[in-house]
Image 1 (spheres, helix red, strand yellow):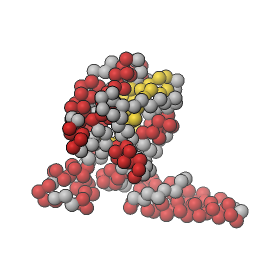
Image 2 (cartoon, one colour):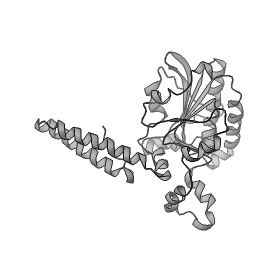
Image 3 (cartoon, rainbow, N blue to C red):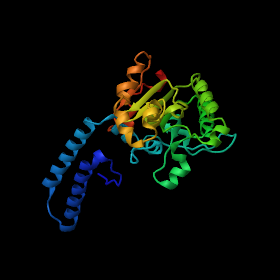
Image 4 (cartoon, rainbow, N blue to C red):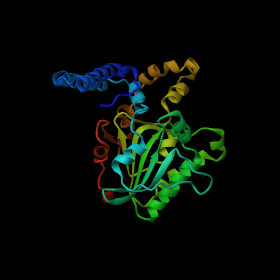
Length: 296
């Protein structure tokens, strides 16, 4: 079990136990003593504490987990699941947007087209990836890959993890809304099987621009919303709260914002409602709930 330097408030009891476990293991290596009983007891306590923490999460804590900096990103799933990935760059109109990665890959011996929204692990990488917020050229690159997938009869697998499309002046000048709208239209008529998995944040049209698919999965502690949570409560209560970010947890908890509480409830009439994929499952197991691609 690896030690993480990122600790959310509600994870502190778990991290303290992990620190004790690392200390015991280090002592075993240094002093060559038998501490298997103590190590096993702490491991059991870690699992029990983890289960207790995740059983009583508030909606805001689930949002924090969806944004956790140690959460697997698209490239992590790519390395764990797919083989022979060949990244394709650029939209052939402006430039390459590194907030979206994509290209052909192999899944269990079958060629597929991979798309993923990618965040960074540190400040330098986040600046390169634009904090996972795609520009219009990113959506146009995604559309180019979608059309390639259709041309060569490859299923499309899209991993969603973004707070939203980039709202900067340059993005507006290059018509980000139009780029997303075109993707919505084209994905709805693609003649190839399509799958989307929300692996973290699924914010606004930034997520929808690569997620109009035959099958949609949402990971257990991920969310899919009309816009990011802070913007949500700011707009709904701007007269009373202004922009006080400290009130975000209370505002988020006052309304059912988690996927399992609201998103599923509003989509009961869909013929293909979103499916649940537990966060603790392995990446391949998380995708095992998807029907065979030939039957989509």
